[in-house]
Amino acid sequence: MADRPPLRKAAAGTLIAILATVVLAADQLAKLAVIEKLPYEKAVPVIGEFLVFYLVRNPGAAFSIGEELTWVFSIALSTVAVVIVWLAVTRIRSRMWAAALGLLLGGVLGNLTDRLFREPGFGVGHVVDFISTPWMMPAIYNIADMFIVCCMIAVALLVLLGKRMDGRRAERAQAAESGD
Image (tube, rainbow, N blue to C red; front, side, top):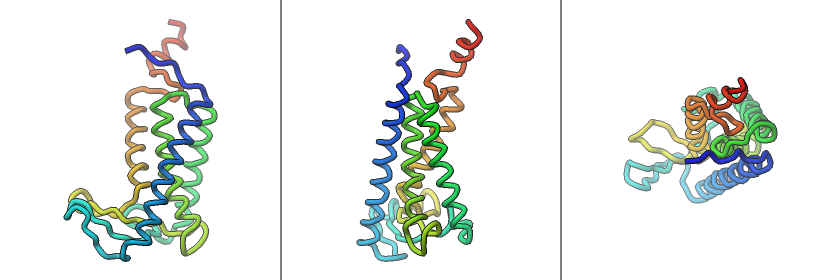
């Protein structure tokens, strides 16, 4: 299969923005729906024990780690979002990198929105979690979390496979830079 030319910077940025917006909207709309419809801290089987909804508000990170450091998570999420936007503007020309970072940005913004605008207050808000898959892991998570985890795996794979942000493979880029 022939290599496709790299994206123009504007196209990469647009793809990242669209994907981030879709993920952010899906995450926040789902959270609004579950807050309105689900009982707090009560299991609601969706597909038996395979998928259970269980509404909680998480002040910490995964598994409620760092509950007293909520503001640190707000700063970390903000930093990640700024770095992704900077990469979108300056470096990204690969479709795969644009997709991975756009979806990751949407997840980051989903949880950052909770940290900034939910109780108990700005920068220390609790993240709304509601998805439980007890057969897989003892965690309760949300749509944003799923995108963050999956996209971090995608980023690791892109790095391991030598796919550069500019759309070239590492070995081809090295050959071009050395004049081969």
